[in-house]
Image (tube, rainbow over all chains, first blue to last red):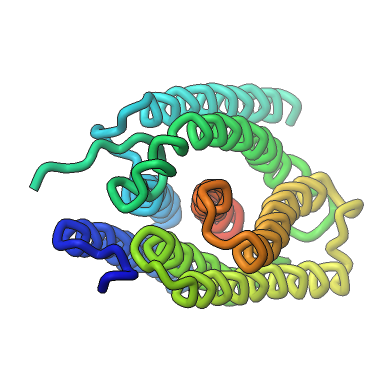
Length: 109
Length: 209
């Protein structure tokens, strides 16, 4: 293993990094499959189904951030805070737009 | 075992390459800030789509009429698989000194990504053949704008991957090339996150409503 630079310590970190991608992959596949299954086979009443797939999407986004992008509380810089702040801005922009435009739509009907 | 501190998003090189690891921090943080700005771009397109898909159908087709869910499922699986194979490429970059593993996983990621773009173009083609063209209604304008913007991002990522494969061949695994690969990894994983929103809020919501 000389050319590979795999010391004993690196074998351990390799196992941990590899496991991270595997866990992420399995969780992401399961969440995706569940969301498509709910819609394709029309499980649950309409409104509950929309809520369920929204929750699954948020869960999958968190899985991607945690296991593929390795964002965690251990981060040295403010990577996580930046994501959370961006999420807040996105929530205000998207939520506000939808709120106003749907309200307007109802009044115009 | 004590965790190595994470200096930046994505897989940290850590003690496998101390020099590149320390170089990576400001460079990748900068790219992370760009990605956040890119998310804002997508958010605006999502907000437009959310209102247009309901209020802007005019006399045109509804989402249920034009969406091909099995096709969207295959695209989702292709992109998710490419995210996992890129993870394997990142591991190869960090731990395997020979370039073979890295090139293999990057090549596989490229094929999956190209498959995704191909499927998407095929979907668009089928839709236009059915008369569901962007100028048909507000819903379709917003749909093509949002999904194609994502598709163009993926295509840009594919070109980026080719350039880096050439650089790996010509320059070898220098620090600069390693840092570029790590940024491409972030870009690629982020596009998969955007796609999670697209398949949920565009395709699944469109069909479920």
